[in-house]
Image (cartoon, rainbow, N blue to C red; front, side):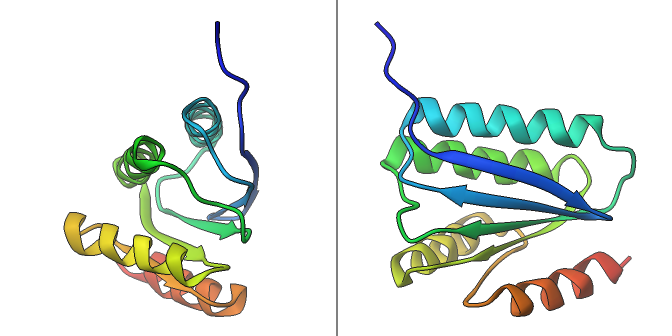
Length: 129
């Protein structure tokens, strides 16, 4: 018996920005489906340098196994042309988890309180190189 998927992603491209609106708490099935959505969208896109900008709602969280899949999605994106990942965090715990992930992994991640701040940082990152 499979569990019902929890959590949703809404993806859209705007030039070299992949915006991901993230809604609700995630279980393993939901985060795995979301990762597949991201992979499909990136594989369909033409172009090599891009940034990922996640916008998290206040309910976006998950158990440790969910967080592992999110980390794997960050790594996969960075291995497939993504130069930086920004997250607009709705809660301090989201920002804390993102910062811990950045420190442990060394990935080019950053958390922000506003979309404007995240977009500014992303433009700087994609402009490098």
